[in-house]
Image (cartoon, rainbow, N blue to C red; front, side, top):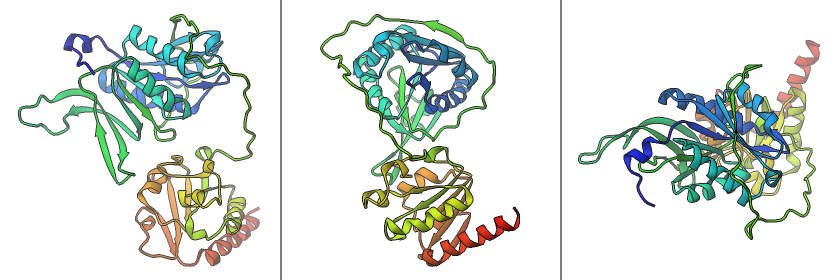
Amino acid sequence: MAKMTIEEMESYKGVYVFAQQVDNKVSSIAFELIGKGKDLAADLGTDVTAVLIGSDVKGLADELAEYGADRVIVVDDPELKEYRTEPYTHALASVINEFKPEIMLIGATAIGRDLGPRVSARVKTGLTADCTSLDIGDFPIAPIPGKEQKHNQLLMTRPAFGGNTIATIACPDNRPQMATVRPGVMQKKARVAGAKAEVVEFNPGFTPNNMYVEILKVVKAVSDTVDIMDAKILVSGGRGVGSAENFKILEDLAAVIGGTVSCSRAVVDSGWKPKDLQVGQTGKTVRPHVYFAIGISGAIQHLAGMEESDIIIAINKDETAPIFDVADYGIVGDLNKIVPALTEALKAELAANA
């Protein structure tokens, strides 16, 4: 990859966010990235631009403005109605080449994980995938004799080596600095009703070629699974629950307190619960008000997905389990006795206060 000159790099300005939309509905990750983008932009003395790609999507610009976007670039074309790799890559790469953002953020969704690497290759820059933290700072972080320390760099942090260590990566010699970011990790800003942004319409032109796939049919999966990322109370079970059937006691507890059942990777690997309910590094990142960790040992990969919960309550028979290091409240004992007793006590308390 060719190194940019200082003059070339200085022509890149602003924090840009790919505002993912599906079926003309903006995905939550877009608002989360705008929120983080505002923090980064404040450190750099610049603004935040959302890039909205789709067909007949201009009407979504106001919503992006209400969550903090200063400007919205709209790429609107019938070829962009459904997500397809080639036209979306062409659209976003064209925006980058035309408007020259210093930072480009993309959600690490199924779409973003396909789109991000292709765009970075096309615009000849690097990409740090699956980031859990973004900051502006110096790189190298600690001065190294004989090596220039560059300032105002995007420091992109992500788990590495199976989550056993954390790597901070920078892209000091090329622009834009690109990252995909895990959904649920960044915080969206409070919505400001009526806020407006500058709207710029841009269309680079789309000529179908042999890399354009043809969508013959869209079949939507029907699921009654609640999105655990939106839950305020999660009752999460691990391998210690013992079986798929034994999750009934967790479901009973969740029903009483208005919670949602989730699980660890071990449970998914055992086939007891679907992947949609998995919390952790390879699952979903959650921030509920209350997180019950039942029969979960607390491996670092699981903690990465739930340690930002407001209150963590752990129930485990192993008093040395790592989960107790992050728990606000811990109960050592047999979950088969404790959870039903807790459910009955809460049921009685709620009935008394009804």
